[in-house]
Length: 489
Ligand SMILES: Nc1ncnc2c1ncn2[C@@H]1O[C@H](COP(=O)(O)OP(=O)(O)OP(=O)(O)O)[C@@H](O)[C@H]1O
Ligand SMILES: [Mg+2]
Image 1 (cartoon, rainbow, N blue to C red):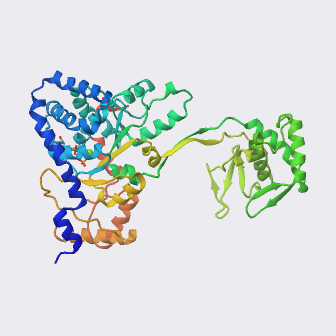
Image 2 (cartoon, protein in one colour):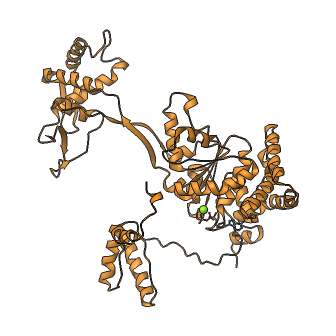
Image 3 (tube, helix red, strand yellow):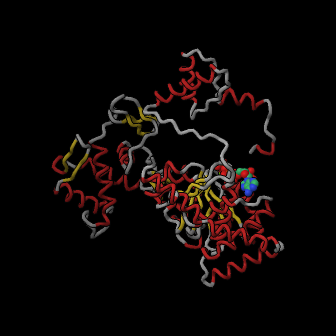
């Protein structure tokens, strides 16, 4: 017997079925328009774009324009690439335009799917960003699909690392811009550090279509992009403050060894204020309690900590002109590690070493916050349903499963989930053993050499013969066929 839930599904369809069905009238309209657009010559297709743009300008909604724009795009792609978009691809394009995540299985042609909503939304002239996971894909997709946009009379740009500013600006000014999430995020940060509007490269965040959405929007959601750099040189300030510290007496401050903090007493504050004024560190008429004094107060505190809480040869040693920290548990030197917030500089001043500039975060943003900037966001991926809840929670994005153009031949097995890495590797070894007994050849991919070697040890114990490929063993193979000179940089 059917439960109420599954009975309802039988009668009304699942929510996904209903979404699929809702696109039917639009797809029928696009199909019906096909002969009309096929009859246009190449110039006619571009003239259509001009007409659509004018209609958008006059206030016609993109939703209303969708059937004609999609029909025009389908015809342009057929001519430019020799690919006639399937109904399922139009369907994916509709879902993207509506700001959803379209789940379309691998090989269903998502690269082409993106051109439909990109073209439609590009008609507004506000720019569309198509986001990919790596620079190779950004370039490949831009080159491939620019033929379609070109046939429609729209321009395509691509963003890549270390791109000259002038070119970057042009790429962002294009109707459709292909870029990786990394480059987009960093360009956003770099724009934010500029002092003039005219220097900015990005011209707003209108609509983004994110390919491989699950990895960009979920796996990397909280990854912060950070631009850091040396702060202004404050060596003189550190040195001047350092000279004041030895004159302090125990009545001037209290130490808390446990939390490694210091506080000045009222007496200490008065004493410091007078000294700092005399030295000209504190400007005439300014007290330590004024908001403008925050930086000075901070460094005076750090100076005191450096002198009273950090002991040479216990907490740090001086070596080759540098203050090197010592790990309090192991007693080892922590080469390259520095205390933050000017504390390391205060120690350098105390030891009369050269003062290294502080590295400060100048700008930072997470992918999650970057992509929330867009007025409209859409995504496409081969696998999104498992993360549907997260997409909804973080980005308010719905996931729609688009049917494949032809019935799937492949059997998609469920993911195996293990509680511990140990259990996972045991599971892997078991699967390898089973295949090996059937005399099947097996290729095992891991994410690191360490993991490959770990697995190799486990296989050894089971007596399963195998080879481990490491970068060293594969590069030997490359050496016999040298790269063409033109690709060597
Ligand atoms: N309408 C079409 N007719 C015929 N071939 C098509 C059509 N659309 C796409 N293809 C072809 O399908 C192949 C796969 O396309 P594409 O790489 O865009 O798939 P995808 O969905 O992005 O896959 P993946 O999930 O692996 O990234 C390409 O070789 C492309 O030329
Ligand atoms: Mg793809």
